[in-house]
Length: 323
Image (tube, rainbow, N blue to C red; front, side, top):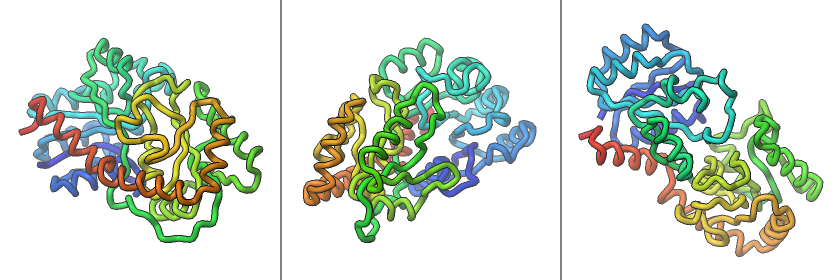
């Protein structure tokens, strides 16, 4: 099968790069259409010129793909799908000025493809999408399979958070509060990696997780009342060999992310409970290592982007978009 994919392929760590590699690992050909490398007119020519069985879109800039392109694809008989990891329902995401915001769900091409696959599996979100005429399907996040391994490095760190600890989202002050609490509680034993301008990616991230006893995680999931949504931090951490403590989300267990088996969880906002978990796993090496290895095996066998792309293609096949 030949897949045209419009997105951002400029960095090796981009999700689009991982998805494209995963589709290729499944035996498909991917035509990479760098979103900011085309004018709308040039993209029209590219869509007409390249025979495609499927068109995928992951939006970054939003100035290239138009509703006219989606109409052209339908005229050509090419099904289209959007793919994204973020949560949108319940968040401003830039408000009405952001084309991809749910405020503009009826006019932005991201929401108007034939199928929209996102990591938001909450039933209330699904009802919202359906009320807006969006053909949405839940596709949980993953990790790229060829970077899913346990690095062989010495254990040198106690406690880390990897990623942004800033106040980027006014709906989610908890992330910054969590970082401040970890720093106060554990002093020099706590390290924040991935500060703005200093991301940790690829093999360096595998080595960081393998060298660390405990990684504390978080997802932008307001109040943790949103069911079946978590960020890619869960599969990324476990798949790359980290031991993770993350707030509990309704729906994690059905995917195999079970407290005391493949990771550790705590009740959102219960910092006393979080501290008890951290302190236990900092000292109980055998229990921590058992869970770390089980979490890695779970992700490697069930939650890579190769698995996710096959799930997406299975949906499209069952629903008649693909042969």
